[in-house]
Length: 116
Image 1: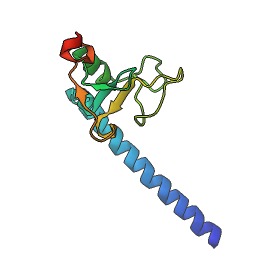
Image 2 (image 1 turned 180 degrees about the vertical axis):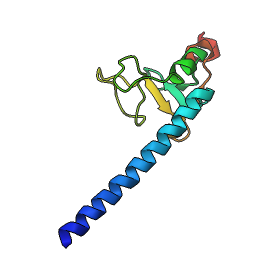
Image 3 (image 1 turned 90 degrees about the horizontal axis):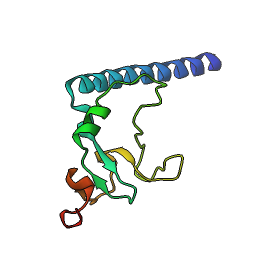
Image 4 (image 1 turned 135 degrees about the vertical axis):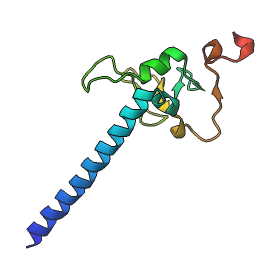
């Protein structure tokens, strides 16, 4: 009886996760199709600063890639996550930036205007 209830709880949890994943995937696909998916993101530069995306990067993020495609963009799970070669750069959801961090414009490669 206990094993049956435990199995039922595991299956119910798995079912909820699958339903959530499908809904989230459908939302992402819709956003990619209408070109708004990339608006969620900023680019974290190698020095740790953040900037808005260029138009080419927006197109790249709005592209639908297959699961194992090596050309997929590198999207960080959190600000501190490093690439396999220990760099901090990558795309990050804007809501995951540290509080108070300034997001520079995509113009001038994310540099301040006097550095351009």
